[in-house]
Image 1: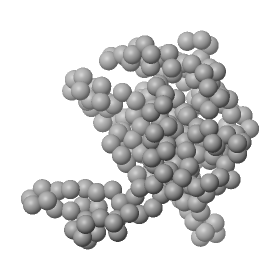
Image 2 (image 1 turned 60 degrees about the horizontal axis):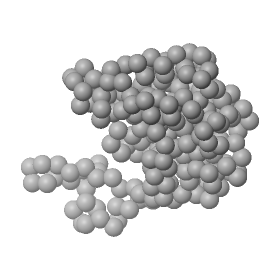
Image 3 (image 1 turned 180 degrees about the horizontal axis):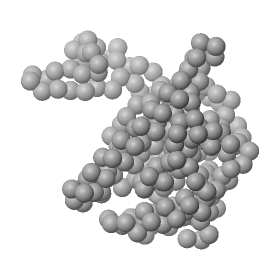
Image 4 (image 1 turned 90 degrees about the horizontal axis):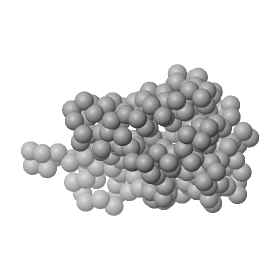
Amino acid sequence: MNGRWGISIDIEGFSKHYEYDEERKTYAILALGELMNSIFRIGGRCFPGTPERNYSERLFAHQYGDGFLVCSDFPEPDASRAIAIAVAIMRHMTMKGYATKAAISAGDLSDIKGCYPKPMRDAKDERVYVGMGLMTIISVMGTALTKAHKLAATRRGAVLILDKHLLEFGLPVGTKTGAASSNCIDWVASNLPLADEIARKSQLQTASAEELCEKLKTYCAMQPTPPASWIEATFASVNCGGA
């Protein structure tokens, strides 16, 4: 596979909930916190990186607004681990009452802080004072981020999208794809032992396809309700009995 894989995953409907009322604002913030914690658990409990493996399994995660980029340390033969991680997170978030979208691509990712102006290069903890104010900076950038983020914008709904260029490297046994597109992974119905193992080790919630579908239907009926086109796109990508 050409480059490190990157998962762009964010909270669906974040701004809509945040702006709806105070109760839904709290809901949106809690959703972001839950996503943050699930990634933290996977990295710490399932893929911490060990000297025996030359730390190659470790993950890197970077927050961008209401979402994250989760990236591998090195290129891998295929996107199997990325798919399993995304599926485990999306199932956990769904069981918690939230909806997410994820897109997986591959590319480079590097520290670009050396290209920043001197005050930013000298900043500690990615923070620099602006008078009595504060600027926070992000020091990494690359096509692993830009390609995954751009791919996420190609579809609506709580979907898991795989870059078509990664299909040639194969899909894990048990992976199912949505009827709408061969590169849209059915994260509800796919039978992925690695995703189950990640959920178990990281203490994330998982459930049967039927339970996940019921949770999705409950989300779609919640105020503020998602647009009909969003609901249609979501259920076109997962097997929920024609919901």
